[in-house]
Structures are given as structure tokens and as C-alpha cells.
Image (cartoon, rainbow, N blue to C red):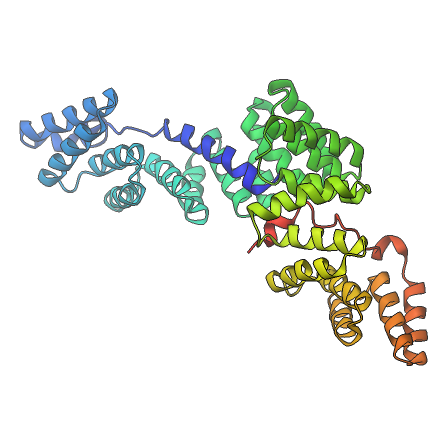
Length: 394
């Protein structure tokens, strides 16, 4: 799952969850207030009725008038918060929910509503605080579990997300299955991901987001023809799907379809010229075709965006070596090896550069080190970050 593609789905899930915001009943929760003047009680009931009918401006006005008369009503603040969420006034809603909880911490439903408000704001770390409080009282709440799980997804904390989402898998909700499968992809648990996606296909067949997720899963399983088949279905359905050009380009580069790869990667680069993953993959692809001048521009930008990436430093050094910039190449390949000392190809490159410089002893030393490394644990792969590039975007 790409987080960009997923965030579109998860926010839709959160909006649906807001429809379950609790409306708190004054009579049930604060019987002592029935000693207040009749017009106060009547105003609260009118506000509730307006809220239930969907007259949000009217309900907001009525609750504000009620709270002017009864400022210590936790239910009044909580219900006003729910109205404000529906109106999109999320910051004001958060303040009302917090006031309600300060007055009466036993209103546990407000914790759920507060978590939803933070979720709608995109403040996932803050959302988890009230959601965890709510789950301590109602640990079996599917809505709270799902929201907490998706918050962890958005925070790239996939193990914790799985802990909250996996108990909901049997319910078969497509949004939960999608989120769970995406977590498995991120964790490299491709068998679990594939099984979950198969469950998802039963309930949501032939949609771009499912084909995209299947494509990512097949990439993780090194099944590139199957990955291309799934990704092409996404592209046919929606050529503007987030990251589709990047992943198609990366996989096509991996299988040697260079023309198609360059076309897709340039489309992604035009949409997002400072995308680290695109700059890296397209730069490496051009370097592989001996187009070093173009490659160096892209790889230099990738290095600027992520100066501690060993693979970028290696590709940069390789292009510099081929372009006659031996000193720069030697500096960058050494930096690459400091970050990834098991890169067999980098040791070979450093050996070749040392031999060029007339340092036979250093060249022999690097050739020896390279020969001791297994190809499987050090081989550089242009697709190594295809699934992780978004995490490194600047």
C-alpha cells in the first residue's frame, strides 16, 4: 500500500465513523440539572432536536445559548462538539470535547468523539490518546479499534496497527481488510498480505486500490510479471492513481522494459519533481543506459533529498566514475560503504577506482573483500525502495 493511496481511503473511513458520534442525553446523565429553570431544559431539548434533524447551524446556536446559561453542562459541551465536527469546525470541536471531559471524565463516549475529531484533523498521534482511554473502558469497540489501527498505519507503526486491525478481519469490512493487507506488505509479510487481499477480492473485486495493493504484494514476492499485470489494471482504470507511474516505472526498469519505465517515471517526476524515489530510480535507469549526464542531475537531487541513502551514493559514484569524475566517485563510494559495508558492487567499484589511480594494493584489498561477500546479500537492485519511497519523501 502506498500511504498516499491509502490515506484517501482511511479518511473516508474516518468520515463514516463520525456519523456514529454520540449525542448525550441530559436527562440520563445530569438529573440534578432538572432543578434548573424550565427554559434552560427546554433550550437543551430544542438543540438536541435540531441536531437530530440535521439543522447544524440552528443546533450550534441553541447549544451556545444553553451553555451561556449552564456553562458546567458536560453534555452540552459534548453535543456542541459533535455539531461542530459535522460542520467541519474541528479545532473548536476539540476544545468543546476537552471541556466536557474536564467537567465530567466519566463521559467515556466523549473520548471516542474526541479521537474522531483529531482523526479528522489528521492529528493521528493526538487521536490515539483519547481512543486508548476509550478502549480501556470498551476494549471490544470495533469503531475505536479500527480508528486506532488506522492511526497507527498513518504513523507508519504497522506492527501496532496489525494488533488492532487483525481482530476485526473476520467481520470482512473491506476498509479493514485493505488496511490490514497494506500493513502486511509494509512489514514484508507477503504471504499474510496475499491471503488478506484474496479475502478482500471476494468483497471488493476489480477495484484500482485492490489491484494496486496486489501489485505491491507481488513486488514483495519478486513476482514481477504478476505485479505488472495488476499495476497495468490500475493505470487503465485511473492513470492518475497516486504512485502508479512510479511503481510501474520501477517494475518495468527491473524487468528490462526501459522505454516504458522511463515514460512512467518521467510522468511521475513531472507531477512531483522532488520525489526521492523517482529521482533515484530514474537516475539509476538512465545510468544503466549510459546516459550519465542526465543521470547525474537526478541522482544528485536524490542525494540532496536523502544524503544518508547508501544506494543513492553508490549509483552517484558509478555515474561519476563513468563520466570521468574519479575523485568524486571515490569519495561517494566510500561514503556508501560506510553506510552499507556489505555492498559487493560498491567494493568492486572502489577496487576499479583504486586500480585506475595506480593503487594496486588497495585495489586488491577491495577485490578480495568483494569476493568474500555473497551476491544475494549485497546485490544492488533498482527496485529496492519501490515500496518504501514514500516514507523517504521530503
